[in-house]
Image (cartoon, rainbow over all chains, first blue to last red; front, top):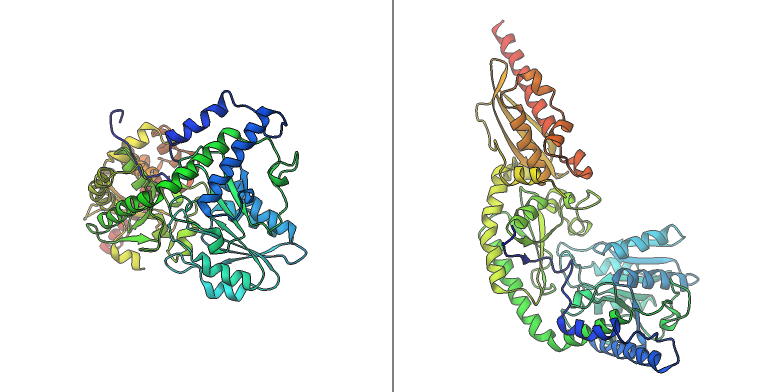
Length: 394
Length: 129
């Protein structure tokens, strides 16, 4: 194991910090320790650095003003701030919140929490590819609806949602639209003005910035209640002394991501499609989860009948390949992924799913190595399995 | 998460496969829950002469199946019925708490196979009568 090469195909779980990002951050871990709230020169230098980062991030998503970027501790906080912040601010207008059945837990659980505080929620269905049912959205969104929150692309199946269409439907009923772009931003172009979103979550580590920093875009005219009360930083929406190294690093990461997006998008998409082809072709009873083409460049989610995801994950790990699984056995709750179930998979199908997430660091060699390994791993586990094609039909 | 012994039994499981002319067959679990196992036993002079398994499930499910078959092989039926889930887990140097219930079904599958053997013997005796 010690000398074995490691092929990371679990980049959605964590990415390395780009050396250029680290370089930008270093002064803020050393000499430039000023507090942007201070009026003296060292404080003002810090303030300028934050504004620079805000601009870099605003440019990545084409926000109308850099002041519309609010720094948070990451995507979970951004989702919480948007959902609870809008709900609490507009509860006099209505109490209904709509979302999809393929959301991250940092969207699901704030909504579940709000339903214990007098709000109503509807989790809208998706089709077999994970695309939101727009008819269901149109039916459910009404004058009582204050917020619709939808993932841009789900991290488990990679399906890109029709945000512009969703925005049109939501705004026709004067509700607000929040989009969780954590697994999307940096991979494909995002233009918040063109899409017409009111709030958008992004995270630093997903674009090779440091962990522990994220942002929420909040459109000018949208007022939200803060979660954190204190010194009034971030326009009063997120009190607390700013995470300077994190903010500066995030800004630089967003800048690099924007500059290199086109190149990386083409490269990673090509690797993704080769991996999908190489996994599906040689083995029967193997299927792709999510949309065949309308998916983020980094995501490959597949399911193998008759076997279970964690045993595939372990087998790959023993060969130096890191992946994650949609199986219950690999989760804390012992339930298979709610996202996979929402696409209509049976429990036993969801159990047999594994997810590969690529990155700009991935190489053709990595992909071919995994494609070469897979048949032996799958055949070994299938030989051990008591399940057969006949039994799955039962 | 897993002990070395669990990983070793997952990597190189013993006694995998079927016994076509088994004297007893036991199946527990179901694919919906994510774990399902079938144990096959061959009995001679009240002893488990041969034992094999087929398992659908996670690493722990496969490792406990492998371990259970190794523990049961050569034992009398009465001794084999004494093998508990707990014994299997401790023989593997422990299992993560979350796996103790869902994936540690192999001892149950063994007991089901032995019960199946008893049942078949009874039927045979009745037919002879």
